[in-house]
Amino acid sequence: MLLKVEDINVYYGAIHAIKGVSFEVEEGEIVTLIGANGAGKSTTLKTVSGLLRSKTGSITFEDKDISAVQPHKLVAHGLAHVPEGRRVFLQMTVEENLEMGAYVKNTGVEEGLAKVYELFPRLRERRRQIAGTLSGGEQQMLAMGRALMSEPKLMMLDEPSMGLAPILVDQIFEIIQSLHKAGTTILLVEQNAQMALSVADRGYVLETGKVVKSAAAQALLKDEAVKAAYLGG
Amino acid sequence: MVFFSYLISGISLGSVYAIIALGYTMVYGIAKMLNFAHGDVIMVGGYISFCAISYLSLPPAVAVLLAMVVCTVLGVLIEGLAYRPLRQAGSLAVLITAIGVSYFLQNAAQLIWGVTPKIYTSVVSFRLPNSLTRLGLSSEALVTVLSCVVIMVALTTFVNKTKMGKAMRACSEDKGAAQLMGINVNATISMTFAIGSALAAIAGVLLCSAYTTLLPTTGSMPGIKAFTAAVFGGIGSIPGAFVGGLLLGIIESMAKAYISTDLANAIVFAVLIVVLLVKPTGLLGKYVPEKV
Ligand SMILES: Nc1ncnc2c1ncn2[C@@H]1O[C@H](COP(=O)(O)OP(=O)(O)O)[C@@H](O)[C@H]1O
Ligand SMILES: [Mg+2]
Image 1: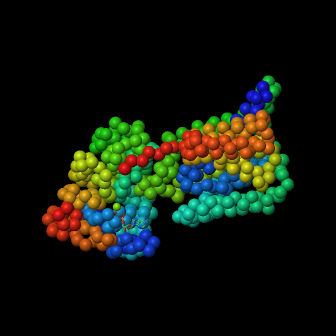
Image 2: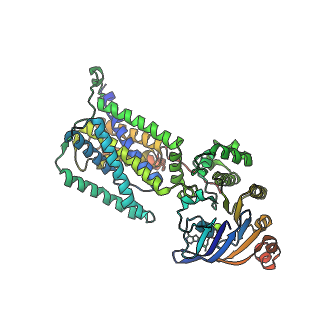
Image 3: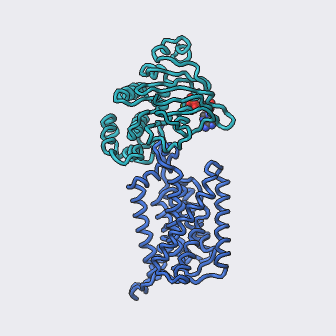
């Protein structure tokens, strides 16, 4: 098992945001967490990457307990997190952003850049441009490229399609699939359940901080309750 | 020629402000806090170099280096002991703590070195030819301006070209995202305090060399002026600290020369207010574009 999250409980002060969530991601899979706004998807990812702490349970990555590891040390373990809202460094150039993605690496930065530019030719054209001047879709590409620079084993994507035009959403999902084919395991958080389930192997449905359903993605696509709640009927 | 000599003294004073302003601006850029004790680190730098030269008879270059080392350690300690525990606290709590640290340093200096002013011997030992000094150019002014330029170039290169410098910029924009890149945010903040405090030591030496009296409160007024310079130039911006510092020094010097010595400070602050009314982010403050 690449990632195993067991019984985590996360609080924001008095707010109990995550209530005993467990899930796992096998190497080579695309796993998706779907759920409405406020269900706790982002909180779950932030807890895995150490930005938030769980009061209970455990998080193991490649059989190592990482629940107490400081967030900046997790990249070196092979974990990358593309946060909600992209969070690229707006005042830095595209290439500087990518260099930051390779911050923990001492070698292979040039090769990493070449790979990312091959995947996102748009970023190569704009390498000297300040990230704040990119469009939303380009910023999403940059955020993903930046995460790839650390050559992660597991890439966690938080709502990569948020706020993008439909054509760009398709493009982003194609890239997710090609990353997966190239060997990256993916944990995908989405409100766009239709798209997420169509590329994923398995899915978990999150409702107000709890996992209410988990099944193969194809099965969830056909599930009446999921259809009604998340797939527009 | 009188105008020229006022201009030189303004540029030289402004260069000291600029060096101090860098400390304010870098710390503000990264820790988003106003380190009120920064001015007092200047004073500590002054006393350390004074002791090294007058009591230990060390050569000036060694004295400067010693002052830099002590101030660097002091800056990192202040951050770690006083500010780090308040990382999640409100900005008012941090500001009050910073004022407390400032008083603590002044009182500690009073205990150690007393309240009688020390007469500082300039670290600059060479003398310029008479043709230059007649224009109002002193060797101290020359060293001060050159130091400021060298520091500016070095720091700009560091921040824009090195991996560590880029990590500092990343932290100043978004600490959460920086952590996700593997950047140790606490270590980066410590390093920022270290750099700012080492610069404060240099500023202390230059200031005392030019004005020769040293008191526990020596750092306060230059500290406040340099903070003003940082805001004037655009807080968070390194070139802004440079431009703000120089302009502030020149305005102050001209105001003293042509308007009134007593009103000089008031004029400096009036100019600041006007600039902020016209451009709230300061002269070179950045407009950050936001995209959804
Ligand atoms: N910083 C915060 N402080 C307090 N409550 C928060 C904070 N962030 C999220 N929450 C709450 O936690 C719950 C889960 O939020 P989140 O994980 O962002 O949901 P999702 O990503 O699924 O939209 C929501 O009820 C939200 O209001
Ligand atoms: Mg979210």
